[in-house]
Image (cartoon, rainbow, N blue to C red; front, side, top):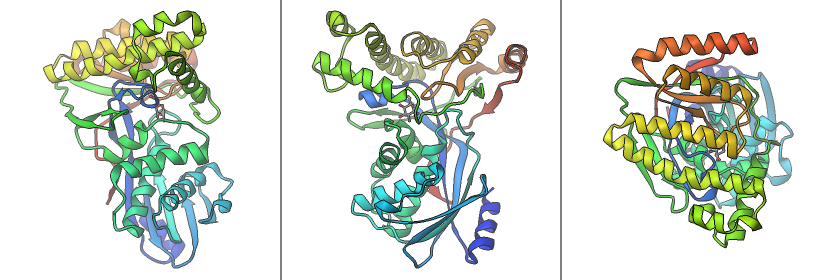
Amino acid sequence: MKEKILKLFKERFGTDGILYASAGRINLIGEHTDYNGGFVFPGAIDRYIAAAINVNGTDRVRLYSADMDAYVEFGLKEEDAPKEQWARYVFGVCREVIKRGGQVKGFDAVFAGNVPLGAGLSSSAALESCFAYAMNDLFNDNKIEKFELAKIGQSTEHNYCGVNCGIMDQFASVFGKKDCLIRLDCRSLEYEYFPFKADGYRLVLLDSKVKHELVDSPYNKRRQSCERVAATLGVETLRDATMEMLDAARDRISEEDYKRARYVIGEKQRVLDVCDALNRGDMETVGARMYETHHGLSADYEVSCEELDFLNDIAKRMGVTGSRIMGGGFGGCTINLVKNELYDAFIAEAKKCFNEKYGHEPVVIDVVISDGAHRC
Ligand code: GLA
C-alpha cells in the first residue's frame, strides 16, 4: 500500500511525498465511558490509513483519496470547508491546528487505507491522527504535544463531522504501541501501557457488516442521557456517580436514562477488573467482564443489534472466553478472546450460523496490536 501511495503521489503531483500513517484501534473493554470521564482500554492495530504528503508552496490543499478515486481542493480558511464528508476530516484537522495557534500551509496529499469502514475500528480517527501528525511534523517542528494531536482529531469530529465523540479513538491512534493496550483515565488523562501477552489466546473481530454510522446515529443522544443524569446527581460526569447515588435519584430520572447510567457506572469497575485480571494472567475474568459489557451495551445502553447479539450468543455457546460488541455500536463487529484450540471451530461455526440466518458470512479480522501515528 505504501509504495502504491508514493507512486500515485508522484504521478499526480510530480514530486515526492513524505509518508505518514496512523492506525485503527480495538478496545478490549471500557465502552461509552470516555465522554463520561471513565476508563478505556484500547490499542492501535495493524490496519492503517497512510498518506503521502508534501508542501506545495500555495495556500491550498490538494487532496486525493486513492480508495474512492476522488479529488478535492480547498483553502485553509473557515469558509473554505469542502462539502465532501471524507475531505472534512482533513480540513477539520487543518482548522483545529490553526485555531490552536499552529501553522498549516498549502500541501498536496494522496491517502489510502485498510481500516475497514463502518466496522467500529475508527477509520476516521486513523485519518485524523495521520494528518494531525503530519501537520505537526511538516509545519510545526513537532512542537504540538501528542495529547493535543488526539484532541485535534476529536475536535474535528465535534466541529466538522457532527459526532460528539470522546477521546478514546484518537488517543489510541496517536499513542498506540506495539503489543500494548493502554488504559486511559479520561478524567485525568493519565495513561498506562499494559503489555498484552495473552499466551494461548487470540483476539479476533467478527464484522457483522451491519452499517455503522455514528454521524446522525443515536450516539449523541446516548451522551445527552449521561449528561442529564450527571446533572441530576450533581456530579460533573458519571465517573463520579455510584449505583447508590443513581438508585437514590431514581424517581427523578427517566427509565431510559436510568438504564444508560446503570451501564456506564458498571463499566467503570469492569475496566479496572480487567486490568487487574490481565496482570494476574487471569483470562477467565477478562472474558467474563467482556460478556457483562456486551449484556449492558445490549440491554441497558441499547447500542447493539440483532446480528451482534447473535454473534455474541454463538461465542457463548461455543465456550469462547470473552466476546462483546466493540466501539460505538449500532452495527460493526464483536471482539472475541478465543483460546487457540477453539479458534478454528468457533470461526467455522460463526460463519455457518450467521450465513444461514443473514445470508452472508461475518468478515473475520485478526488483529495485531501495533504502533500508532508515525512518519514511515
Ligand atoms: C466511538 C467514539 C468513542 C467512544 C466509543 C464508544 O468510537 O468515537 O469516543 O465513545 O464510540 O466507547
